[in-house]
Length: 272
Image 1: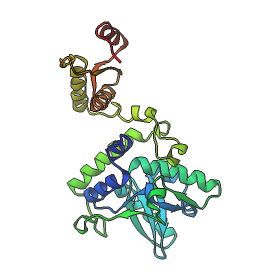
Image 2 (image 1 turned 90 degrees about the vertical axis):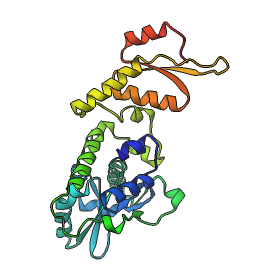
Image 3 (image 1 turned 60 degrees about the horizontal axis):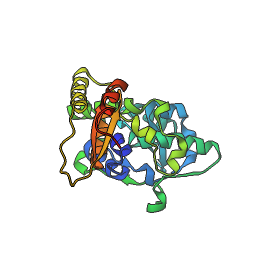
Image 4 (image 1 turned 60 degrees about the vertical axis):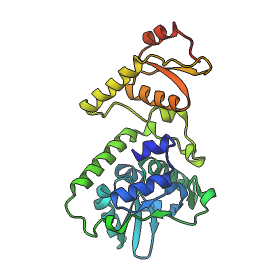
């Protein structure tokens, strides 16, 4: 969910990392504001990083620092990695989407012989290393990971669901995108899918979309000029998202799930 809020531009990575730290108890790393030592990529392979959604982002005399989208799931492989170097582990939570982008950029730039990777926000914040946001002391995970609490299980399930929605490599933003911090409209269009929805959630989504499709334009005072938009998308969450975004910008929207429905609506009052 944090990744989708980031992609939609509702909050910055720093704000969302703060929320993740407060909710999960793990310190969070703000990758867009950090400077990474690319020599650390030699500790793991790109496949290891993709499988565990984790990246070695720092090292001290006694420990290695690893950013992970789901720290609970990375504990075992990261401990094995640290044992090989005779060091302890410091896990940090990171947004799925910025971590996925950083993994791709880090290995590509390291292969090109570069020593440092600067995040997209580094020019504004001028950091010299990792930017870490600490959670409240009461929420820090215990030193020895015992049985998962119900809350932690629920949080992990939400994180896994969010990861499944963006884990396909062809849906990740390209490496070139990370240099500017901007994202294309094509990525926005693919941020919500129905692939992994539970039946009950899918039914609610379809109900909302159907209401949008049959929504009649509201009467406007004669002195108010409104811009009318027609949204055509076979994906119900896509229609809901587009209508919400356009209405937020002041458009009056109608929606259609198919070409024939759109043609019927086009026979009425014109759309901009």
